[in-house]
Length: 122
Image 1 (cartoon, rainbow, N blue to C red):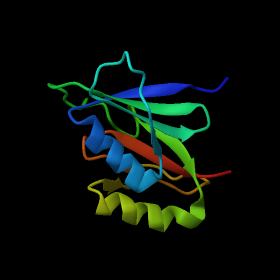
Image 2 (image 1 turned 120 degrees about the vertical axis):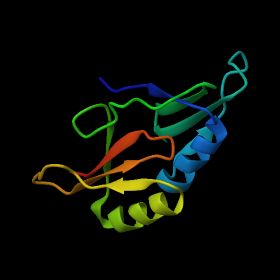
Image 3 (image 1 turned 90 degrees about the vertical axis):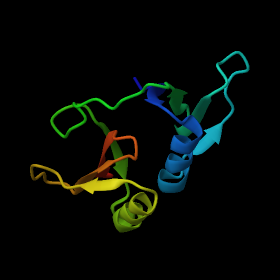
């Protein structure tokens, strides 16, 4: 079973979408005409998406942590340095893992404060 999409709240869906386009290479796709106007949908893989939704009073959860809520993604190890640079250049903060693993990985915090884990592709 694969996931179809996950939704993240943000105060500015277009700005957040631009962050993911510039750093992760995700592609913005059309949103349905009957959706609220202030959305941004991104394709992250075939048939898998992030839906960004405007929530005016959005505040990040205190539970965005390695041992809390975060989103983990596989990425080519050869591009780790390039990805880290793109992230920092676009306002993300690199976060070192709290524990060692047999594979390489790192975390980053988006400008809104969401925590993502990047794991070397198998």
